[in-house]
Structures are given as structure tokens and as C-alpha cells.
Image (cartoon, rainbow, N blue to C red; front, side):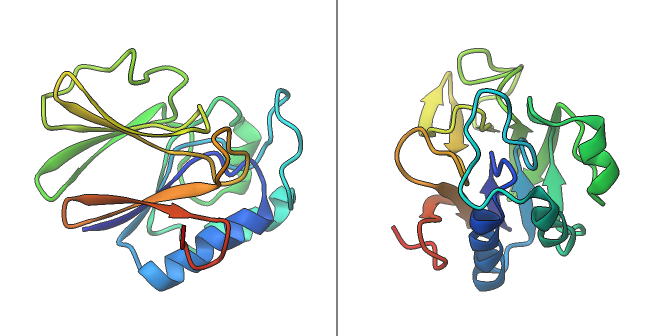
Length: 176
């Protein structure tokens, strides 16, 4: 299975567009969205290319492929305008025999993991910082932020054949 994993778009049409280019070139089976899709939040400055009304149709084009969870900036109005479920606190996906726990990171995070078996993958966003480390036998990954990185680079994750790769969104090709 191929997955494109992203978090913290925060309404940036510019960088959501770059994510959509990766959808076209990588052709994943699923687009996993780890929350904070449309609103920038009261603690963040407006991201470059802030245009949530433009983000909606970009994401809607892939509604059959999207698995999304609620971030701390999602509201009921977001669900009203997005044609895929986005208000669950978490989702569980089994791919290639591995359990993936998907959440935003404001409720569960690598320091406060839900009950998972060793060998599982915990995917979260929220911090806007890329992460790839093991905690108690569980691989914890954070794709970083699509639009408001706190580690200097806009990014997402790509999963294929048991392997994870961080992809840059600084250009439309995903090159570092």
C-alpha cells in the first residue's frame, strides 16, 4: 500500500497545491490527513497562500482516497464544507500487516501514547516538527507541517512497501 501522509495545511492553497502535485506524481492508495486542514488557528500567523475556500475543492477531488482526523483547529463548519469525514479524534488503518494509529497529536502524542502493540505505527501532527523515533517498540512519526513548519521546512510523509520517506513541499516535486 502507498500512503501520502500530511498534517497542518492550515488553509494554505499554495502548499496544498504542492501536496496535490504529489498526489498526482506518487499516486498513493490513500491520502492521510492528520488535522488542521482549513483554519490557521489563533496562535499562528496566516500561512503563505492562505485561501481555505481554494483548499476545499483541492481536497474534495480526492475525497474517496482521504482518511482524515480532527485537529485542534477543526470546527463543525469544516465538516460542513468538506465532503469526507474529518471530525474523529483518531482512526486506525491496517496496511501491509501493520497497525497505523492516526491522530492529530493534541490528545495523544509520542509522550502519551494510546494502548498499541509493539510494531505499530503512531502517526501524529500538531507540533509542526518532523519526527521519526521509536517509543516502547512503537514507531512514532510526524510528517511536519504542510504550511507552517516550526523546523524550517514544509513537508509530508510518503509510505510504500514498509518504508517511510519525508518529502519536501518547498517545490512541487517533493524534492528535498
